Amino acid sequence: MIFVKESVIGTPVERVFAFHELPDALERLTPTWESARVVRRPPSLAIGSTAVIETRLFGFVPVRWVARHTAYDPPRMFEDVQVSGPFKSWRHRHLVSAHADGATLRDEIVFEPPLGVLGRAFAPFIITPRLQRMFDYRHQVTRAWCEGRELVVEEQVEETNRDGARARGWLIMSNSAIPPKPSSTCAPTSKKIRRRPMPHPSTPPSRSYARRARSQIK
Image (cartoon, rainbow, N blue to C red; front, side, top):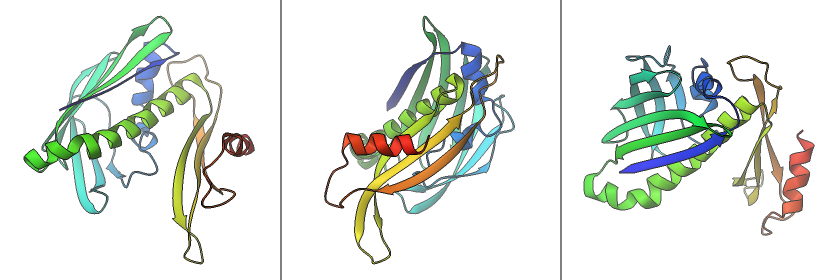
């Protein structure tokens, strides 16, 4: 099975690639809603370097994911392959190429889900949407850091309050981006996470409410 995510980022190829070489790039690219923890960072993107991540299969089965870098061609490409983990197989190529508006970032993943035929049958409904959500976030993070913009990712969440009642609201993640300096590295930023209740648990969030919430965290 194949998953592809592609985005145009308004900075040179070298800058996009440099972001992925930051020591904490893996942590930055891990969404807060993913039940994942970086156990060991790869020391670099060079061939042979290894990353270890603890995650949960189907949200509750703990799994240790070990990935090894198998190709490295800066500033155009690097690749990692699952050594052990939740998938039967996983090969992820990170490709960066020149574009008229800056650079194209393309993630290509060739994978085989677990559970054989059953896993392949359910992958379009479980795995693919999760990958889409994750890589939408990863590309937003990469673009925000490289272009020196503020990142605001809004996710509707449902939580249990102190009285045990369920309530919906917004999970708003924001970074205060520092304008990038004229160098090959991406701009440092800080991250804020805030939860804001909606006016009423049964009422969908309005656009004006989202805009007000977003303006308050700037």
